[in-house]
Image 1 (tube, rainbow, N blue to C red):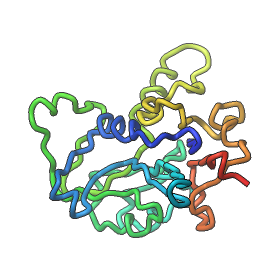
Image 2: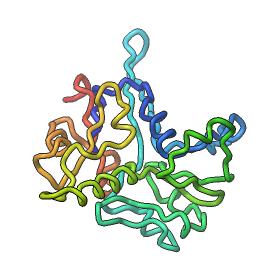
Image 3: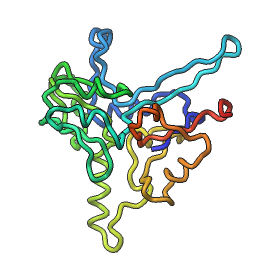
Image 4: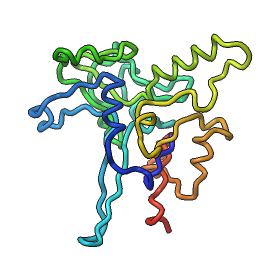
Length: 227
């Protein structure tokens, strides 16, 4: 994924779309105050300068799907692992909730379910049947909407001819909802894909790259801040 910070307006449409797509609970005011909110993607704000010359940069932060993910080596029961698509996945029925992965994640994008949450009527009707509702005691995180990836692979498999998923056939909810098209998703292994071309922008960087986690999310700096 490539995220262009020059295009991000901080509207958090990505956050809302992710919540609806992936059955994320609304934990309530008391649990929020205890830092128990669950958001697979959050929008961080960084201020520069002083009024009236203050400037803000919005930075959407989600699981970076690291190739060298420290959370994977830390998990004592191998509940998180790298799949064949290069995604850092989470097996909920294997997780025993040690929260070790959250400690080792430098991006702080793993969340613990303190309760088995309920959705009041009629909100339960909006639950996505393609995504499991997690129970108390497990860790969870962004999956790049793996359910959409699987659906695209199934559709590609069923059609004749080329059975590979084509560029643009998979769009995570956050990317779909972004009104400024700040987010681009695709396959970095395909040099002709939109995401590969976007990543060649000279403004590219990876968050905390010096930690050698090899993140799969590339950010593009704000143009006015570059150089």
